[in-house]
Image 1 (cartoon, rainbow, N blue to C red):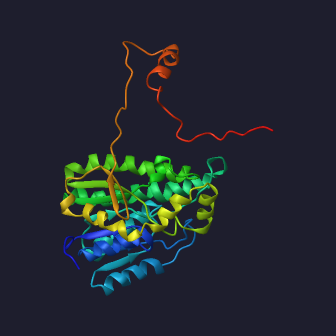
Image 2 (image 1 turned 180 degrees about the vertical axis):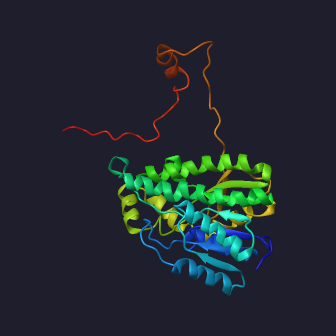
Image 3 (image 1 turned 120 degrees about the horizontal axis):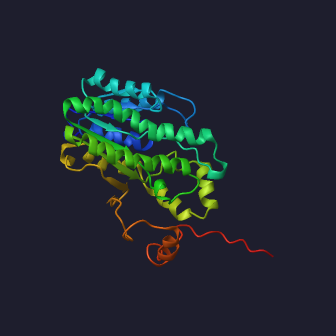
Length: 305
C-alpha cells in the first residue's frame, strides 16, 4: 500500500468491472478511501446486480483499504447525487471523481433507434454531467478537487457503428474543457482519458464478429492485448496533488503507451475584406483550404456487371 492519496476520498463510477475496477483498486492502493459505484447491469445497460460493486469492495478491504459500495445509476440526477452523497456520508469528504460508467448499443446510423441513441447519451454524457455537477458543489466549497473523465477514440472516427457512442464520448471532451475552465478558480482540475483496453464492452462476441467482418482484425488483436489494469496508473497520477497543474487536457492511455492529445487549432485560414459570397466559396475553397483534404473513409465503389 502506498500513501500518495492518503486521507483522500474517491468516487469511481462503473467500478465493478474492467477499467473502473482497476481504477478503484489502484486508487485504494495509494491510500484513498473509495466509493465503488456500479449498477451491475449488462454491457447494453439492462438489468442490475449488487454483486460487481460488492466484490470490488471486498477486494479493497482484503488488501487493507477502505471502500463502500453504491449501486445507483449515473443516468439520472437523483442517482448521481446519491453516489456523491455516499462519499460524504461514509468518509466525510470527497476529493476525486472518476467518471467511468458506460454501456454500448452499437448500430449503423441508418438503423439506429431513438432509444439506442438516447440511452447512450444518458449513461455517458448525461452521466458525466450529473456526477460532475454534484461533485463540483463540494469541490467549490472546499476549494479543491480532481475530476477524471472517460472519453474514447470512437469520437475521433476510428470505429464504426458507434455514432451514438462517439458523439457522447466527444461531448465528454467538450464538457471536460469547459468544467476545467469554470472550476480552475476553485483549485479543481478536470481532465479526460481515451483508454484502450480489452473489457467486456469491447470484447463481447457480437462486437468481435462485426469487427472481423469489417476487416479490423489487427485492431482487435491490439485491443485484446491491452489490459484494463494499465489504464489505472495515469488516473492515480491525475487524481494526485502532483498533477495540480494539468487541467482541461485529454490523454490516450493503454498498455505501454501514454500520449497527450493536441488541442484543436486552425490548420490554415482564408481571409478577405468584407463578406464571403457563394461564388467566393466555389472559386477559392478548392484551391486553398480544401486543396489537400482527403475523405476520411474511402467510399465503396460498386461495379455494375
